[in-house]
Length: 103
Image (cartoon, rainbow, N blue to C red; front, side, top):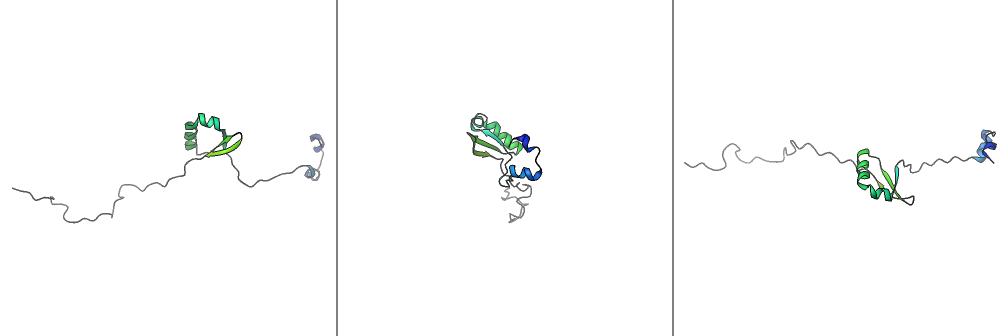
């Protein structure tokens, strides 16, 4: 049946000819790049992924072979100021010189 023939059909009639498929699987909304282009611009692509946090799918002949994804977020180290608190013991007098003075 041609498109012009479908225009006059009711909703019930359209259901006979049209199929709607909902794919709730893996939805990927990432840019695709041919491996040849990736090879030529590798460092720039890596920097772009790092800055934008958007992954890129590298393909060969249209088939996915790799995903370039941004690095995972590292936990920030605790502030170094005061990080040694309570890790040392003071033994002896800290005011007197360490050696005896000679006259």
